[in-house]
Image 1: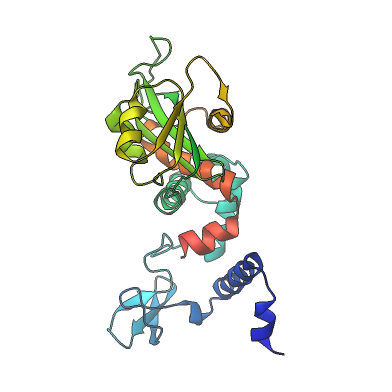
Image 2 (image 1 turned 45 degrees about the vertical axis):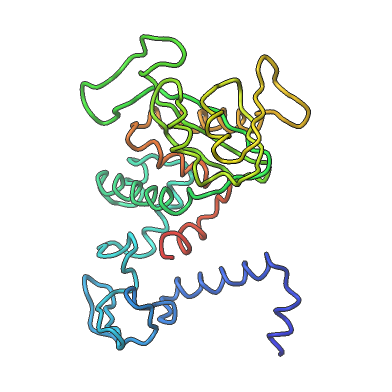
Amino acid sequence: MDLQALLKTLSQDEKQALINLIKTEGMNNHNEATVYCPKCGCFHFVKYGKFKGHQKYKCVKCGTYFTEYHNTILHLTKKKFDLWKSYICLMFEGKTIKQAAEQLGICIQTSFRWRHKILSILEQKFMNDTVKGIVEADETFLLEAHKGIKGNKKQVRKRGQSNEQTGILIAVDRSNNIISKVYGSGKISSDEVSKVLKGHVEEKSTLVTDGCTAYREFAKNNQLTLKQLVKIRKNGVYHINNCNAYQAQLKKFFRKFNGVSTKYLNRYLAWFKFIRQKNDIDFLFNELILG
């Protein structure tokens, strides 16, 4: 069989699917060809005993000792490989931290740590979109929360935008690239717009917002055309309907958690973004966690 000729007949998506399949098979069977030195990238290594139940290796080139899960959240874990995959599946099925712990036979503290290790990976590796073309931007707000800390329940005393609510800036383009990040609290400022969007909006794009003046300086400094909708919802092809729909779905997603601590909010924004854009557990495990 001429594999090279066969590969040329595959589309780009089919080639990527084949690559992911090969990687998945390698990971599931603990194929040593998927292991490489985390320091120098060399694939030439020898087995060097076991450490906490995991195979240990020594790089022939630089002498570094490592396991196949070095620099991943599975490094030094005492739990089985498949238990993590089962946990991720339960997490994306909507199971609570307590429910996942009970079903897998782990303690609640371990279940909590695992969730946040997974979410931290999403925050680090899945929040780097660049938006372009027609870019819709708007803010949404969630009540500041200190979930898990006794005596810190906070009630909103002011209606609308206030320092008692956490502000989230969301920007989406027409290709479903998404930026979502906590900017602070209350009404957004020019500096906060720049802090979230700088480096993530391609030059010569068109930024569409409501009448908020904080976007004007950012658009001017980054060679963007600014279209602001003041007292109107749509101006030809320009609107922020996609952004508003994303905000509504985001708030629905948050309601099932009965509150999310403000300090973890960006992690949950990454989780929701992953569900909207990818929602592929194999990709999460093989490409982001083990990758």
